[in-house]
Amino acid sequence: NKLNKYIITVFGASGDLSKKKTFPAIFGLFKQGEISKDECRVVGYARSKMSNEELRDRLKPFLLKQVSKESNGEQIVDDFLANVTYVQGSYDSDEGYKQLGESYKEIEKNMNNGSPVNRLHYLALPPSVFGTVCEQIKNNIYINEDHAKTKVIVEKPFGHDLESSRQLQKELAPLFSEDELYRIDHYLGKEMVKNLLILRFGNILFNSAWNKENIQNIQITFKEPFGTEGRGGYFNDIGIIRDVMQNHLLQVLTLLTMERPVTFDSEAVRDEKVKVLKAISPIDHNDIIIGQYGKSEDGSKPSYLDDETVPEGSKCITFAALNFQIRNERWDGVPIVMKAGKALDVGKVEIRIQFKPVASGMFDQIPNNELVIRIQPDEAVYLKCNMKTPGLSTSTKITDLNLTYADRYQDFWIPQAYEALIRDALIGDHSNFVRDDELDVSWALFTPLLDYLEGENAPAPTIYPYGSRGPSELNEYMHKHNYKYMHGD
Ligand code: BG6
Image (cartoon, rainbow, N blue to C red; front, side):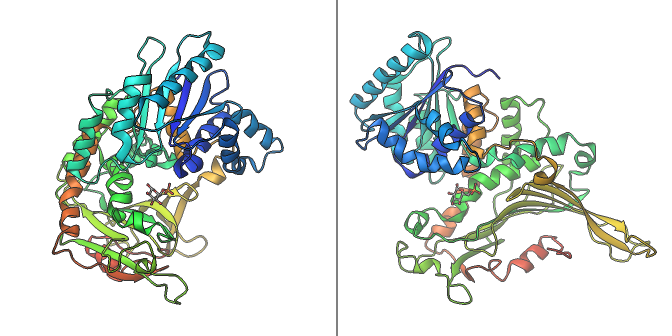
């Protein structure tokens, strides 16, 4: 896991993503001592005219948020920013990239006696310019020497459907090998998502029960308590399925259902992921719920269509529930329900594995075991078990065996998703990045559904109130898919 010397370049340095996510993540690694000034320098690149100082001033308030509890917080931020420089240039002409190359030489002179160091390029940019920027990187600042390699991080959306994703692949593949490309799905950097394979395969109890003989239903839920809030114009072309289901939640589903990889090697893991994705049946268009949020019940929160950036009469989906069937020996017949929505009652992302009931006879209606893995907020794993009610009673009581990270693991640093993934890219670990064939199968699975939902005969979404649990047919849908609501749900 040795970290070699690096220059990290953030393309799109003046944009929102880089201010809010990319630079804070690099800073987080610095603050944590994962990268140091001797090992790593950071360069911002964008079209805006700016000095080094101006970029630093722009970034500073975002970084200060991360050190609000530390007495020497501002000093840490300043130390980090002293290693951040800026190069201005356009995305499509050589000039700026040549200047970038010059600035690398300068950095290498005082960091590595003039010998080249590794280059990690983070594209915090819209996908429309991925191709151009990658071509320019290849032509002007590409390096592939023993101790100085090139790596490129790109972020979703990787296309809009199967065809456009393949097109993008076609543009990038001749420029960089799979080994040089890192496709970020930030859910793969979340602590609980990274825990899934260990939880499953490292515990004989879970491992042996992880199949259709014991599991009745799996539920993967994503809830956000806010709507598009002015970003509707952007969201309208995407919808909830592309926004979080085809990528983030499908990754969770894959890790929950794949077979045991031979090792933790990134290719071994991703080979198994692709296999299970290929075993998923086409999504049944008649077995879905789609919704769009309306005004809140008290009228205080706007509907999706009230967002001025949304085209009038839009049928864009802000909520969906989909059922997946995996036709293999382990899963055949187990409903896997994925549901996601904006403007709901709470913000949380969790997995529920509901087990089958125990035999009746000695018990009359005893609740099913359920394993809940809360990805956010407050990472937790808890298992609902039946216990004797304490005391003289002989009745049973459903009780949580509860592992809440904030209570149990107080002394651990749990990195933010982007921090974890940038570090993985620096050390060259591809396990938590999306491979090209994996991306292809995921689009192949979702594209027919998206075509149907965006075609001429598209059904109208059910309107649900802002701040509610989603469309009213949801309970019935869950029931139909074997999910049993129990006390406390
Ligand atoms: C992004 C989506 O990929 O993920 C956003 O574009 C969504 O719409 C976000 O809010 C959710 O990420 P997180 O880490 O906040 O759960």
